[in-house]
Image (tube, rainbow, N blue to C red; front, side, top):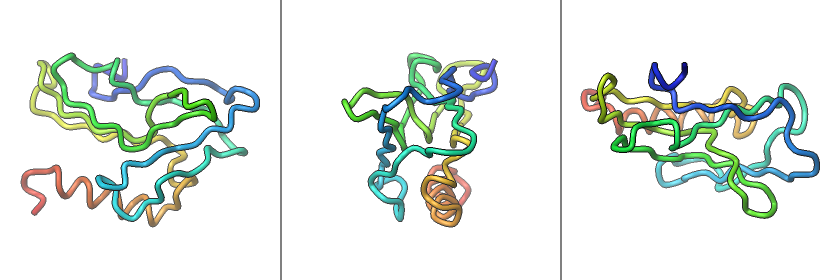
Length: 127
């Protein structure tokens, strides 16, 4: 259902795998002001609903902005992702997905500043 409205989200988990040592890697070129990496939360609501390139159309543009990896380097999806929809019915639309706990990972002010700067660069009339 999420992909029908432009959200590139897939099922993740209710609890992270035991002893997985999960870390977010941030695209600091696209999200200036954020750290290069930060750990996945260890407490609170740990449900993970990652964005994934696999959930969008083949011709759509997908840019991962915060990817979650484990200690072995295995990818577990993206906590922040940007999509430019190039296929009907969403053709011409843009989606920015931000995982619900990302503010806890990098700090609310840091996240808002980075996301708003990114959106300002992507929206044609934002300048």
